[in-house]
Image: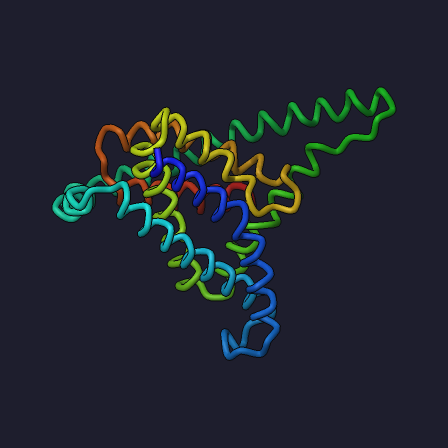
Length: 249
């Protein structure tokens, strides 16, 4: 019970409280004249600093919860099965692409429904732009921070993104299912809700929540069957990057 309370407190504290604070802190640091990415713009410095702070806080959260929830044998299991995981990584790439396509189809269906609602409301003399607002908002916020940090420095940006996604996989596929009532179901719901954190406009998290729903089902199921971390991280990364590519097109 105590561990459950700690896990939920850290969940709210990190995803919904700390992110706005870290955004303001990184903005101040980017404008302070510190010798960080000297040739980059203020926006690029701000994004890189914010990503670094967010990932650092995430790693601390993972380490703390791991000490409470994950047994030492779990980490030894990951290390002793690197060969199998390396082979599974190839399949994980296909999984990530499949998740991206499935998410894109569902997001397109949702966009169509919202467009229909907009037309119906306009016929009733109620101006509505839900579909357009959802697309515009989804391109900003946390997604914009990730995109700008990768553009500022490809290697650093992708490395930070990979660490961030690895932390999410550890927390939502392996830690929360072990310490929360409802196990993987609860972890999946929290993973979906988390997509709306740190956003100025909550509607901007809808597309991400669609993708999170797909991953909560597919990767949650795989985590219960294989208990391997690396393939899930790769699938998550491929899904994220391919989703960005498809959305840009």
